[in-house]
Image (cartoon, rainbow, N blue to C red; front, side):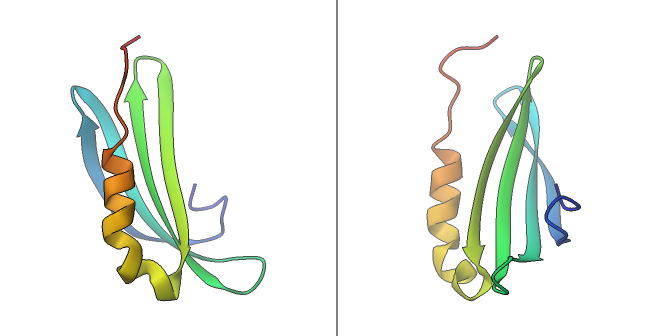
Length: 82
């Protein structure tokens, strides 16, 4: 994911969604419009499926929106398991 956006990995952490493992990433990257962005992503491995949640915000808005991003990501729940 970091290479795909030609960015720099700021943070990586192990997380979980119940019993399922996941990773949380924070990546800095420049957009095609020259604006510096921060990409927040959570990836979960559930059985043989990968669920990806990601939010990109301009770097100058990252701190102001961090609480909203966290709430958005925590809203994700599995309705049923594979």
